[in-house]
Length: 125
Image (cartoon, rainbow, N blue to C red; front, top):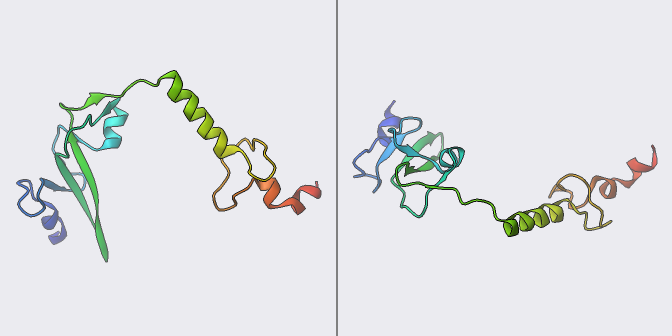
């Protein structure tokens, strides 16, 4: 319980901004993911507070919080953005060796599609 005491600083004296333990943030504040789930974005506002989750033998996990009343709606997807996203996803699915659309995102660990990475397994079928 002493570790949670280090994370509780609602005045911001120790950490510079108001700090709360994990899952103990007050109402009216949300992380970027929580804002996005509500269809909102921070909209240029500064970080209002943070939550800390202490970890054993490592630094704490930090999540920055933003005020809900200052959040703005997410900008709508434009046709140009939609085309750019489609091109980027196609590039992630295209094998650099055989130049075909693999139908899935090529793993970075392989660098090529499964058919090119393991050709001996494809001839057995």
